[in-house]
Structure formats: structure tokens, C-alpha cells
Length: 194
Image 1 (cartoon, rainbow, N blue to C red):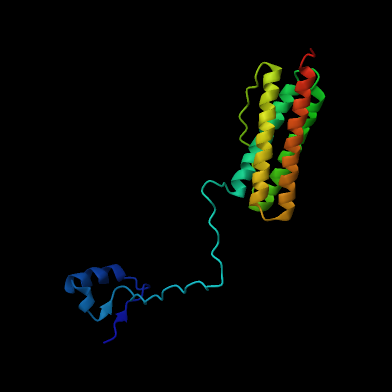
Image 2: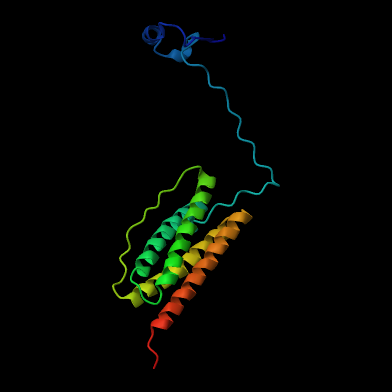
């Protein structure tokens, strides 16, 4: 015998279920089913053999979005650090001010890319960096930071398949290399001649 289904629209469904459970404690034997029968589900069709499985990202490789956000935070922090160093005056103040402007431009470019990829604006999480009181040590920190910037940009370029973004990341990496060379030049000018 086919089981009749009780429609969900009945206003007295709770009362019916309570009475039915009292009259027929074993609901499976009754002619009315309280819940619709489950249709057997077909197992999912296997993927075609010719379609390659998507490559899972390596746990040690950050995603492009994570790298992008890290680069934006870093660009904002680099701009502030270069600007603070340029305010100290001395031989390197003009090139350091130009590097701060480069970093602000980098942030704007990366922020635009982030918006294009995610549809949201990014607010940098800039922690004020404490620069060494000695200018030469502070420049050394900026030199190492510029090399790290170069490495992160190269890593982002390698992760992204879009040629336009790959070019942007490659350009930013070259800029980091240029900043490192400029800082080295400033430090050379600060060294006393024998």
C-alpha cells in the first residue's frame, strides 16, 4: 500500500503528530508517513579522466590575496619609515623622500588591484615602526626591508597568472632592488674616506 503524505500546510499538524505518535508508536507500520520518504541519491559522477584536477596550493605558499594585503601593509609602513628618515636631513634626505613617494604610489597601485580582485577597499594595518636613532643603522634596516619587498613582489608575480598583474609585481620588485641600491649609495657617501 502506498503511504499518503501529510501536507505541511495543515494547521493542526503538531496535534496530529502527537496523537499519531500515541496511537502508533512505531510510525513505520502506519499508512501515513509523517515525513516524506527520502529518494535514493545517485552517487556523484566521477570527473572525466581528461580533466586535470585543480592543483591545491602548497600550505607554505600564501595565496595572492594574502600576499597582496601583506604588500599593502608593507608599502604603507615603508612610506612612513622613508619619510621619517628623510626628515632627519643630511645627504640622503631627497632620495629618501622620493622613496617614500614611490611607496605611497605602490600602495595606491596595490590597493587598486585589491579592489579589482575582491571588490573591497583595504585599510592598511600600519604599526608605527621604531627607527634606530642612528641614521646608518636605520638605513641598514631600510636596505634589508627593500630586499624583503623585492622578494615578496617576486613571489606575488610568480603566483599570479594575469600578465598585467605579473608585470606590476615585477616592476615593484625592480623598484625594491633600486631602493636597496640607492640606500647603499647613501651609506657609501656617509662613510668617511681613509
